[in-house]
Length: 103
Image (cartoon, rainbow, N blue to C red):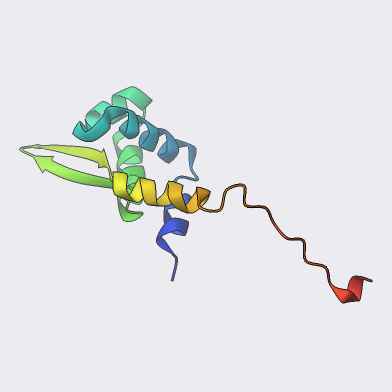
């Protein structure tokens, strides 16, 4: 089973998805409509739908239907969890392990 952090990092490992995610972070709590994202980034609707689906499946983006519109928003709890995972042991140092076989 893939961990949530690995799934999130894999989703962000594509330039288009990273651009979508960063745009949604900029948009804040209100999020953006699918069409607005496509206009900002110049992505075709089918391509955009594929990448949004991947971000939703990774738990980084939530979609909320408001009338006929679908708004996409960053799941900030998930984003902070990922950032905390990446920085949790920052600058603690690493002990170099030596093997006796190398001696």
